Length: 227
Image (cartoon, rainbow, N blue to C red; front, side, top):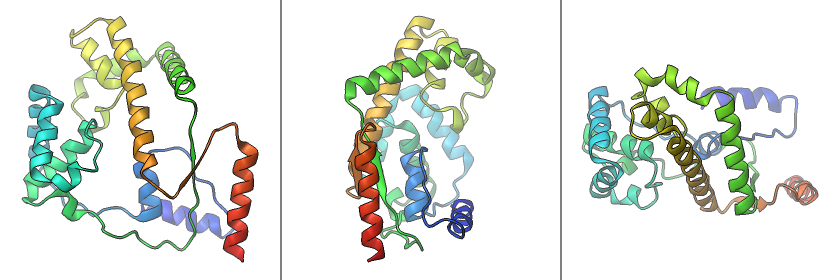
């Protein structure tokens, strides 16, 4: 967060407007609203939770978080095991709900934020995701995952893409099934991301082809901000 704000400060010395694109919804939230200050938790607690997740599955995580922090469970992406495991390790490590550590108010930034969301037709979006997965596979995704196989329990590798291939390398299913799961889970992830972003009422949505409308809207907003 501090590094991003320092870079923005330098950019605003030269530019009136800075465009930030890509990344996750969490990254955008950190830059525009501030990072929640979470407590340090014993790594052994997380290791234990990972082991329980591997043995008992996603439903176990969902139920544990639901019991430990109903407020957070009501807003979290319940299909995202990483978010659930992070919440559960804080709950177990501190004895307090995960939501009690989250900021109740947005941090005021020294710049105005305009949020633009791009939303394609769902069929086109899924087609592009499948094509992108084929490109990544052709570029060596399976070989890359194999290099990290021994470290597959690391948090950074608990993601869509690696997990499906790790399952293949563990002999749970064949390569064809791994590719099917990879594409399916990538589409599901995109759907969850859209659902998450749609909760933000500050986002103005456009189709990517509507460049002129986007440009016009930004100009209008800048005009309002200068008036």
